[in-house]
Image 1 (cartoon, rainbow, N blue to C red):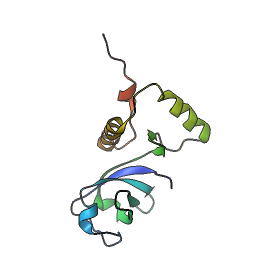
Image 2 (image 1 turned 45 degrees about the vertical axis):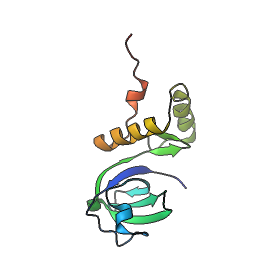
Image 3 (image 1 turned 90 degrees about the horizontal axis):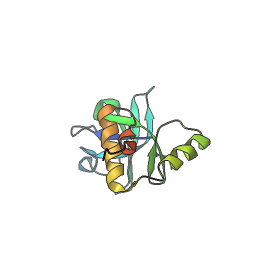
Image 4 (image 1 turned 60 degrees about the horizontal axis):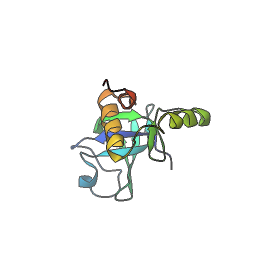
Amino acid sequence: MRIEGYAHISRKADCNYALLTPEDWRGKILPAMELNDSTESALMLHSELAGMGMFDYKDILMKFKCTVVGEYILPPNLTFEQEMIELSKRQDIPYGKFERALVISQSLIGGVFNDSFLFKKKNN
């Protein structure tokens, strides 16, 4: 299963095409298996409760596309070789749940993948 991005679902989202209850989806930031710009819809995955749902973009507050490899979130549309290069860049920085949450939050705010803040050096 390949994650193509993340999205923040509106608290007023139409959950007619989603498994589980509307409360399980509304207001959540969840991984997207597909973000389809041509149909303006997203196939969302609720990983904690093992559910899937289809949402129109009108029901999504913020979204961004990316590639997920293991625990790492990478830019979208990379070749295998590019993924390996990007992963090697991230080996020297701590990348746990906290950093992952920061990358998701920062990217949702901007609407595009952004983890550049992880690579900034501190001035001593």
